Amino acid sequence: MPAYNASGTLRQTWNGIPAGYVDEFILVDDASRDNTVELARSLGIRVLEHATNRGYGGNQKTCYREALERGADIVIMLHPDYQYDPRLVPMMIVPLELGILDVVLGSRVRTRRECLASGMPLYKYLGNRLLTLIENICLGQNMGEFHSGFRAYRRQVLERLPFERFSDDFVFDSQFLVSAVDAGFRLGEIPVPVRYMPEASSIDFRRSVRYGFGTVTVVLQYLLKLVGFPPAKIFAGRRDG
Image 1: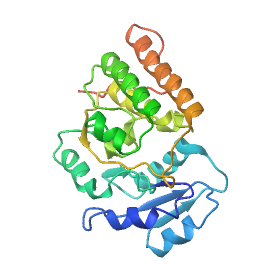
Image 2: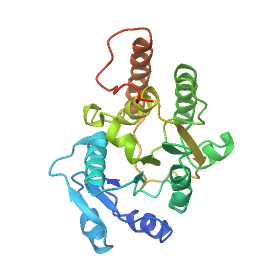
Image 3: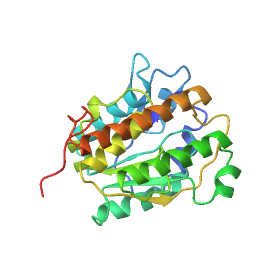
Image 4: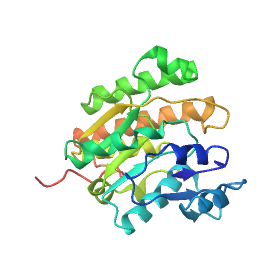
C-alpha cells in the first residue's frame, strides 16, 4: 500500500480486503501529515516510513523492495484511499497463481457510463481512452486501460524489470507496463468498480497532462528500441526462452 495522508480511508480499505488471501500487508508512508502511520500500525500492518516525500513512483520502489526481501511470490498494489474495490483482491491473484498472466490490472472502464458515474472527471476519462488506444496499438496489446493503480505482479516481474531506474513520479506506472511488455511478460485485467471522492488520491489537470506526455514518451522509447535505437534505461530486454 503506497500511502500519503490516507488516515481517512485506510480502515475502510483494510476492512474490505477478504481474509485468508494475503500473507502480509506492507504500507509505505510517504511523509504523511496525518496519522496514517499510527492507524496502520494499530491495524497490524507492517509500516515503512519515508522521512521526506519521494513521490508516487519512489513510494512504489520501497514497497516492491520490501516485498521481495520478505519473500513474496505475488505482490498486489492497492491504494489505501478506498478508490478501488478491495473485495476483488482474490480475483487479482488467481490468474497469476495459475500461470495464465504475469501482470494483472484492475480496469476501471468496463463501460463509459459506469466510469463517469463513479465520479471520474471527463478529461481524465478521455485522456485515459486516448492513451490506452495509443498503447494498445504501439505495444500490440488489447487492454481496457493501462492506467489503473490496482495491480498484481508475479515475483519474477519485479525481479526482472529495472524498476529502480524508473521515475519517482506518476509516470512510473507507464514505464513499468511498457518495460513489462518489452520483456515479454503477459498482461491482463479484471473489471474493478471505483469511486472518486474527496478523500481519494488523484492528480490535478496539470499533472495529468504531464503524465500523459510522459506516457507517450515512454511508448516512443519502446518504438525506437524496436527499430534498432539504443534502448532506454527502463528496458531490461526480453527473457530467455
